[in-house]
Image (cartoon, rainbow over all chains, first blue to last red; front, side, top):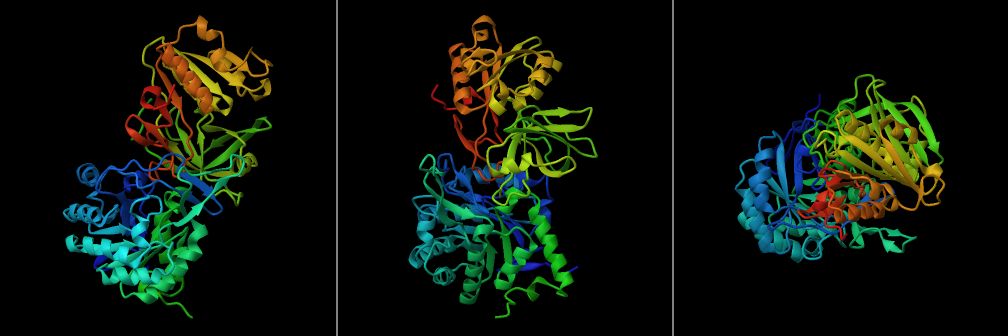
Length: 303
Length: 264
């Protein structure tokens, strides 16, 4: 039995496997399939200061080895989260992390400040990389100045572990990562979805209601691994890797590239029990390769 | 509809016990397990994992056609539309199919002893009405089926429907029953129905909903918006309702038409 314990900027995890925001609801939707406490953390659905209805249907298109979505941050707002959802999830014995989004730095900060008051939420993941909302989201994540403005505003009011989720839809993800590190981020997670498009050629119409959407699934994995590799060399804070992880071998690939932990996203739709399988699979892989802990593989790439 | 949110869900490898091909574009998969199949209610659906189809990444949502407790079988009636469903049609006896189920809410339970419930199905949309019809009959209601298809050959499981209740048919080419669409059938003018449940192509369900509304008959429809997770997590399959956007996979697939914002 290898030691799977992982620490991300003070956040202690029983293993390095978390579930990605927007793919795992609030965790409770999957409680019939796995013991939620067997994974290192659950990053719950993107939460904004005010309720959002999201984009019109259709919001999803299956693509080669993946899917596009343009959900558009549908959620009932941070007040609803605090009053109705938090009581249902606060006693789940793993890291319950809230993904926070907004359309201006003040909104992000106010939302983060509310969540800072919740005892059983040890961290937030700041979403400055959602490609599916016109105002905000990715708009902040594509420039160093924009990213810094949000992270600074949140850092002033948020005292626990602050993870910043980065967009791959940029010229240099390393530059963005360095700027959020400078602004006070404790860790970065990457990648959010890649902006894409799919067209129904018979109808000559985009398959998604807002034409474009975010690509996820195994199709994006090589891009994600490259981003993790570049960013982990550029910053001194921990990197959390995600993008198309389907099994433990994919997870180990990210860890070798420099990820201290990983998030499982779209794979949850294909197998609702996959997150625990990845955690167990990492253990077995470490055992069979004579490694005693995850630390022995993080960033241990021969090149 | 029937709120079944608290019903336990499973992920299981089921074995293909029998495969039937009622028509060139349909396959009926009869699945079984060594242990008794879990409780499932009419109107619910399953998500199946499609193997041997490289272009199929996500599971495919399929409505529950029937649960045969005697033979411990779950029936899935599948229309072969794209690569995923074509791969399902290639399954053979003894193959394994990984299934997440049962998902979603269900059709309404019996409201009143002896109530006459009209079940309107079009194309492969007839699938969940078989289980629902039997459920209504067993629980003291009287199901009446109104089934529509393009042509006689597209009518599915007719003999089974006839064992449960009266069956009225429309075909577009007049090869069976009355010519035209389900909403043009003469039985709608002759008989009184206490409520209507319908499943099929959206234009058909909208026409049925319009008829129901005009005649002040309660009506529920089963939607099949494109889905990813099937569990209410990804928020992809939303339908606009009077309560805002809700997941068809979790709050549905069955909705009372009063909840929807359809312009009918």
